[in-house]
Length: 270
Length: 116
Image 1 (tube, one colour):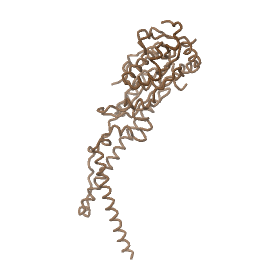
Image 2: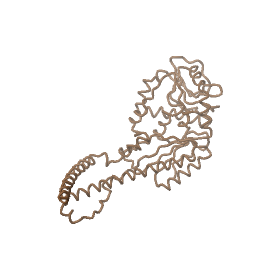
Image 3: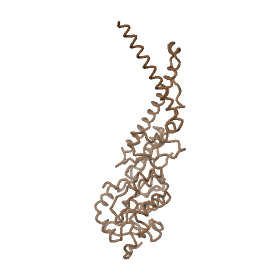
Image 4: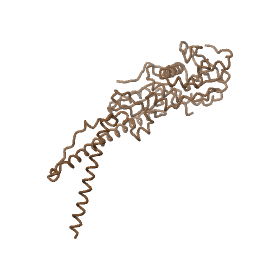
């Protein structure tokens, strides 16, 4: 993995995956990156190093990206390619990931722009040192439908017996109201469980962020009520796994833990 | 049981090996340290993109306030049957209201009579 000579400006662009300290580039050997035109390489920024790839500029214009991101298969291919490089580099050295699609007109431009941000990279590296990101999702069963709610038994007075129509209407309304209240109670409880899980996990995390809950594919009989991500110290990772298991047992709901992730969600604010 | 992938034993981290696309997208698209690039790429409106992919329903807050995720997932609230049920309920409510109103006016007449 060597630094390249001068690129053909205007024809090529530099795609940046991440910025890191003392990278071990053997980690990215064989990874395709976002193009087959050139291999993933490095660009020295002084104390820091950018992980980059030379791409054909015409393949990475805004218009091309718009089309690419509208196609789920293409989007997945590029997102995974970006993530694979970031993850491989981060496995060997402290790494700050950049979001997908950060591009420069050439190596000099990239070096200049990234070097200007050295302070932010340093702050981000400091923040995530010896930490990993862990995702926690909470799922609950979907709400029961009306039909499953039993009809409440009503005490019928003699007067009402002489007027069956309003009695039946009231019973129906009571049943409806009962179903609605039951649904609200279940929803409240699910959200309270989500909050409780979040609070517990935050207790051992350095930082946390809430992400949008994912809609579940139809046919999946559960609803996601929490999608959160946490910056957790490496020495507390085991503790997190234990806590997740405990919470799962205590609450009876599905709790999924994913990670360790490169802390994408915790380098943006520095 | 646990869903944790502990195959990545060493730190720094490399990210779980098996991850769903939604998990990766919500991290690589709008997270990470944002540095201005030469080529302005508008990663679409993230919301639009994700709606198109049917990955996400709403922000946590919106979902909580409106119960949107429940609406989306609760067939009782989205099926045609439930619309019919709502119509029925509406009709019955109107009938019941009419009766209550006539009852109330009868009662007020009665009490007026009693007062006299």
